[in-house]
Length: 121
Length: 108
Image (cartoon, each protein chain N blue to C red):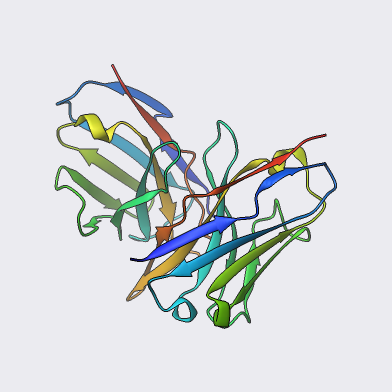
């Protein structure tokens, strides 16, 4: 079964750090580009970050640029998001999602179930 | 950055109704447009890719259309399990995959 499982969420104080993990199974993880997407309470989905298959290309939303770092370990079938200098507005459920490609078309599938990050004092 | 705007933000409808949700891009994105369904506490689910291609396993009551800047998602006959939030996503400016703000579909 194709599966993505996030972990590492929790309560952290403003200015603190947290590292999220996403464990992949049921597919060849190293063959897929990966992403983090978040949903703040009462808000919509926000794309956060992207990483290429070989870890040599990364992109970030302006809202997290310079504070978050995406990485992956293909040997461990795992994706990570290091979040530093956290702010209250980073409070959200964080999802990992694989990029599927068919020809020139891209979409996200599968997605994980999400992990909740709460930034509060 | 390409901005995606959905309308309406929320919608009340009854089982059996035909529902249409609109997504507009701030610039032409050809047909690089996906639609997702999201229920609380669950992973988002892909419904439509490339503006009008139905993802395998998705009921045929869902359909997508449009190109350029204007797109629609139509549910031909609402079922109880369709009440959820729907998002469009552009894949024109990869890997910057912006979403629309979502349309919450509620039971009337």
